[in-house]
Image (cartoon, rainbow, N blue to C red; front, side, top):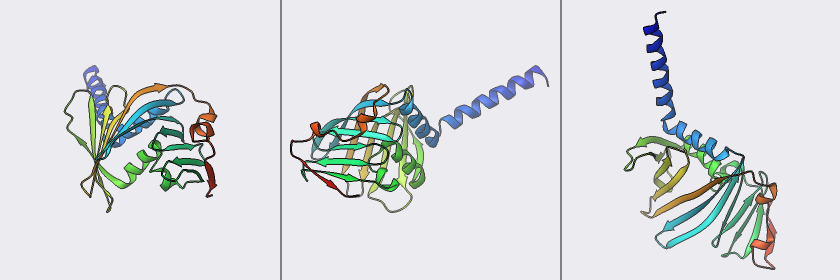
Length: 203
């Protein structure tokens, strides 16, 4: 094999790798890998709806997660989930199914998107941003979902949910910090809910 032919084959292979890495599915996989890098990750988030904006923090490590805000608190240790809401004023203990986890666990959501949505790369308005447009394969409350990733880190920065009732939900994630988190991070912490809060075991 000539040097010229070898060089062409190498360039072709590199081009193919770059193209594969830029598919929506590959970007979701890269995001999951980036979240798991270093053991765990914490971040700040905000959710904006027509009723206003709520903020909180999220921690993730493997299939475990914790979400803390004034509107809701949720812990999942890989088997058991504890959820608190000011609307109910109680902590519900459940053993969520894989389908239920897709609604709360960002890592499980990535698998849900790949299985249940048609994904297409969309044009980004800013540099170093990778945008995916998702449309549900079957009838769903979501009309269109837009995911915005930082191409430098592969981490999700913004998710915009456009619903069939014309409402819009925008989630922004900032301040990612990678660090190993103790297992206690993902189990119920009674100091984070009002004293005397009732616990209801629904398992």
